[in-house]
Length: 234
Length: 234
Image 1 (cartoon, rainbow over the protein chains, first blue to last red):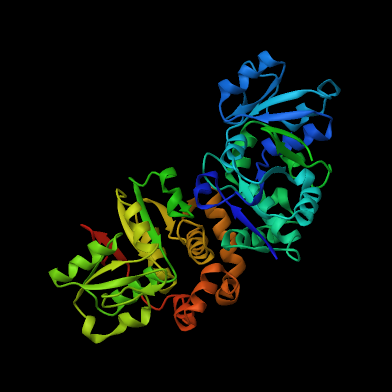
Image 2 (tube, rainbow over the protein chains, first blue to last red):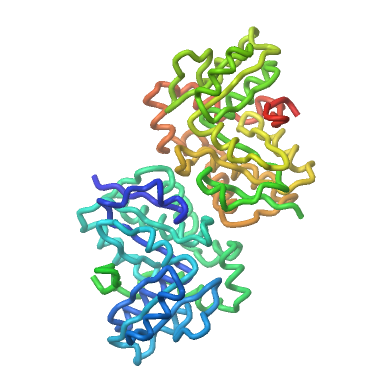
């Protein structure tokens, strides 16, 4: 049976060998939720950057620039990190250069994986099916918050472990812990998360609407996959 | 209100500032359970070492040597990592040099903390009271398994968060996750852990009796504290 493991923080990535794996990068609040939303609304590609300056430099190549630092939109960028910004008609067929505090950093750390895809509650079922039908073992990388473990990414990892349990076996304790937490929270994701540190942080930024949206399951069926440094639809 | 945070792996210690904190080092299977047992049976001191050779060199200074690598007793050492080895009359008043795969490494990483104590289910209530009555914020360091997060140490951290909830506030998501897991598992610790990776690993070593013992709560009231590089009773 294939296996699924969960890396609860990008700062633990040195413990995992990704070479033979499909890696699912998760940053529920809000990078990978934005990416899923953008592809569902016709974006052509998203290129992730760890560094702000590299991202900004893509403007000269006709890219829109997008992302955040510490939850806030960056000066000079076209778009921030709210999924509602990625629903506009005008973005259809366009290319975006994207950088965020945690999500794009996690993606960079997955470099060398056989395959890298983007997961969020918004495309949960499609990611699940993609992994179930795929040939590779799976590693879910939770973006966390500046290296610290967070609840919302852990819950999404747990959702994948739970939904795939008849097909893919948990490899270690982290997937089991995530699975238990998801089963505890699944019927009340928003309430379960309301005491979490990141939700409190984001509430201070007045984006409760974003949070509720990012915790909605299966709105879209796109699965963004990294090809030659660009995310495109699988 | 004081705060409690949980570091789920020693490999995440760079994210935490320990200078003003009481750090609780946890390696339920089995280092900190052995230490608690040894002090409850009259051991004078335990000196933790990260390196095998340094530990072995203490023989020349009249110390007993103890510990394990990969769950197995080390050649030339007096004792292994089973708590039942630390109950003998002959150990009363003696000093032990101790090294283990994970537990003593975690202790070394806590260097610089205001205070370092040792926790296990065996002395749970006493550790809880010690932290409640203490002046410092708390950080629980889970020893994990070679950097990876494990369930048993996470559950112990969660037990402290739960028991202290009216007196000490969770600082981040990791303590909340641990608390949820503990509340889910608390009436069936052994069953909850039977699928965990470390319990499976230890079952292969035929030490089910050790595991059951290490999951027993409040057998002892000792709280081992590090003073000048040696653990002694608080």
